[in-house]
Image 1 (tube, rainbow, N blue to C red):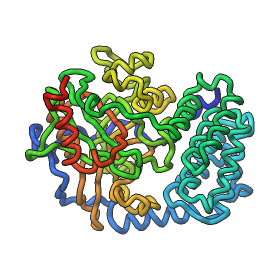
Image 2 (image 1 turned 135 degrees about the horizontal axis):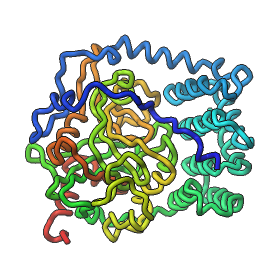
Image 3 (image 1 turned 180 degrees about the vertical axis):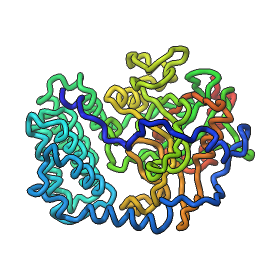
Length: 469
């Protein structure tokens, strides 16, 4: 049960009130009835976005990944050293260091997954090591291949079902043969006879099985035709299975018509890749597929968090079971607390038994929350390894949210940003206090979402009289 007690390692959230409200970003928009363009001209540079600030920020991270900072003899995993390990593990995720001492330290921390009666701070350190360990194992099998044995030991000995599920998920994303994954899955079921009652084990075991035999996706047109609630905007985020590629968002207005801009389908690229390459059912994992409730924005004028979010407001998204939502289900106040059947009823019939579209239901049940659509104040080279993702090199990864384009020149002036375009479209279709639904879905045929024109073909098919029901 102790896995449920751990606090989240999310971007920090200010508890004090924010001073700048809707007017701050609405002043950037051409009007409620218009849709903003991607290119933005500003005269005021952002101090944290200047070339000098970027260099200083990067140098700080480089200093943190020096091998001496990963010495477990000097910094044992104790309550007193939690802040140290939180800082250097985050730096590891950003900089992806290669010294052997760093890999050895990570393996040493993961060995604690088998130790009983860890304190809460110790568990939070191990949590973060599991997250970053997944990232390093998948990206650098030559240097961090030793983590395979650590993950296997976790599966074999750890009493914590979440860590066991994370270890199995990491190995499943590697290059293990299907028969090995089947053997490990069987071992997990043997060790945890009540695995079907644990959200992490249940969802991971199903994910692993579907990795070998992916289910056929129901007709996309059925999903695009469907209306969860009338008179509310519906934002569809169509993603490739390779999350290193860009998703494309399209929007239906309150009348159920897809929004057009300059005679073409309105569309915005978004990135849904997790920095750690974690699966969707874990904190800091990739953006889950499924239904989200959209309810307004969180203003973002606080430049303490400029790096994480950029300078524009964030669109608030809610998953099932998450508190704070005014009304997740149509016509019902409060958060979703219902059964899977109640969630499935929000989907078209052909999609109700399609497991991937249920991910937000299970992610919410596992405690994931605080999803947003936001920009990125960090420099495009702040995250190491961006060369692995040339198609999304200007978009920064997140730890669960959807990332919109936002770039700055060396003087700190904004060059490009898609958040104003997104905010303007949602405001134009739903009003200042807009609310509606977002549906994220992976599309196996990437040609269908390779461009706005390609998506327009799919949208036109879904709205044509021949296919409309």
